[in-house]
Image (cartoon, each protein chain N blue to C red):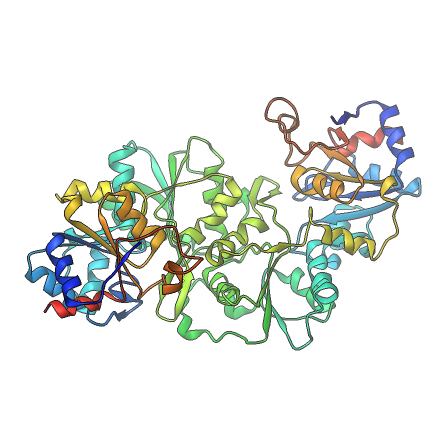
Length: 297
Length: 297
């Protein structure tokens, strides 16, 4: 059962116990472009106590650099080397784990941020924001010559998704030697006015058409944690993952052997963690909002 | 085990046994715009023997009228009242089975043929080919006012699929009272140069984002057969369903209590029905091509 935090003593005890604080962003620090009340203050408090602060997001539409701009715009202190996104983790996986040969390419279903991270890792790609694929015109195989260098299909959230992109990606996926990766498998994501289809929804047509299950890189997968470990030393026993999603953030923390704090400012509501239909994924701690920790000031 | 047909006697016996011949089209009579060799001749032979010929297709991008034009173009005799498509069956389901009140609407993810069948059944709809939804621009909930009259989301193959359509449909699907229908669940469909993502792939993001399972109208569902029964008298014992797909055509025939003939000119190959990985869906008869029946001339 989760400990429900509410008193100043509860939060002081948390501050004592954990040196590394990993934060999901959407639904924890902000929703869309609206900051969660008190979030900035709480991050300042943590930094003033010399805590290590990391941002771990499944958002694959932005590179770390462009995600940093979002922090800047909202007035949240963050440094590029503190930011871990599933676009970055996907690029690192392809270059460091798969060790994709330099003459091979990735077919991208995704946005500019994903392309930027691939480029930063020296990975060649086709598709993505290619203007030729930015079309709603009918797609015909007779006008398509697959690139024989494509060895990976990588799919992330793509708000310019269309039938041409899906059809091209599906042609590659029919070759068993082509690896199928998705940046993350979130079925939805929280925008300011409500939920919108997430990366897991965008890759769903490719799974259905090909009958293949992709490897997912983002939370809750271990690949994301491996990425963080390669850059930061942290003691799992003194690390806390803060998130709003049970099946990504909390599962991710548990799989990585770190403690977990669920906040209720995003996807998960009280009824998801209590009563007869409560999830089987149980965080160590629950608090209404990250802003609750303001009492530590 | 299926009877493998090859001799003139085999086909003569088939001709004797069945009065009503139901044909899938794509992969049976044609692939894309290329006729299967001998298909026209065989249909002529069946008609000359006073057989009842019906065309049962999951293609939901065309109305019966526009599908008839495809027959005309390819030089295949067909009459509108012989054609049963999943667009038509979906419209009939909404009007006759659901009995959707006249002041309610359908949000359509799909193409002109689907809209035409809805209109023919007197059903109001939004979405579909609405130019406002023909866009690759980013979608924002702040610019979207859901139509409170929408009580059904109907999704079929839509080669102009995009994030705006998916996002709007998903908003409706978050209301439990909105019915979720798909014209058919084919993961792919055969085009001239190979497979392309089918209606089941197009609806996959909606299933994933909403976590809901739609009711599928086309083959193998019984709804399609109910549609045919409403228009044609046939004796299931003397009816043969001819198709290229085990999990749609053959399953459809079996569920309807009619006999089934698999042809190998489309999706299914010999290795899918023989050997250790053979499908558990076993047709009554197998022949290489519908053209094999030319020997009956």
